[in-house]
Image 1: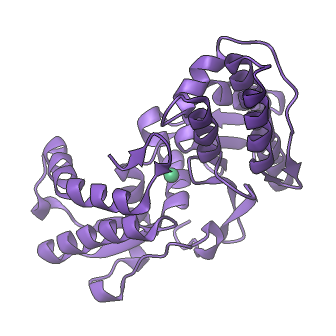
Image 2: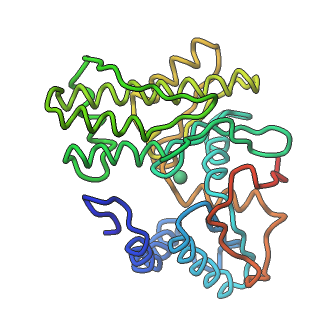
Length: 296
Ligand code: FE2
């Protein structure tokens, strides 16, 4: 396991985990697809952003396979892949993406040749924030689904800090506030879970809606593990209905991180396919708007 109940994801343990499972995963994927390595035409991998120890394992395996099969290799941006797989699998053509996961919280849309970040978290990702509070509650990891279940038991909203700064959101002050409330013993866990969800999802939906208004886009798609939350989806659906926009959520297996989105992004980026394997490297700090979108 690469996560601990207390601390969440640990980079070097995550690397060990990735190393331990990489061969099995490729074998299983080929078997499930009824393909052999010789049937594959291109190898695509996530170049960034992410934890360098983990990205290096992925790239190492990708290079090994590409060299063995003598086929092109391409590195892609993880965040953009969420948006492109949503475009591929839903009817969305030019959407705003609300990308909410453990490490990432961004509102992304296409404008002037790039995927621009219209809003993002100023500190931690929304998923990590939820997990941190769930751990403080003693719920273990991952905390998102447990908080979601707890929240269903309450309708009692407790006032919490609502932190939207311009187009950005922030969670660290809210985390401190929630911990203090829990530790005071004056609040029920389910009320805090409910209030947490109502507050942070309202923040995210507000910023996503403003991005749609600014860019004049009429579609919203979701990406990332937190986007599996039924309440977040409901709030997005209501917001879109009210402004006569369309709302799309890919099915769960393609909302969370998945190999398909990386593969599809690699197919899109044909101009970057290369057999000069040594020239390819990870980009742990690559931002969404660093990438020139030359496939649209
Ligand atoms: Fe992701």
